[in-house]
Length: 91
Image (cartoon, rainbow, N blue to C red):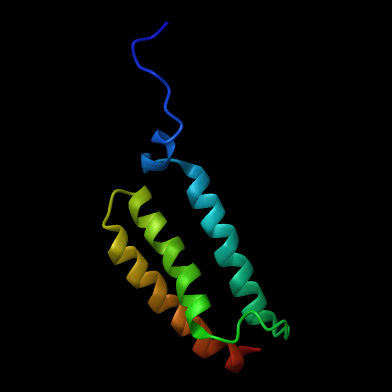
């Protein structure tokens, strides 16, 4: 037996856990796909949903590369807002 006990909550503290990156990337890609496809599903009626998911993805990527997560969230949110503004012009 090892001296260190396994604690499942330790995985939430691990900044290098790739699962969080994959989950947030999949949600961000899905939201951007729905936004740019022009599908009228009622999910992307507000800029806040796009800003939220792009911001979460940016924050998790920033923490994954050992940078400030809040700065990554802000950059991701600005990127999401720009995508929301540009999507009707492109599609």
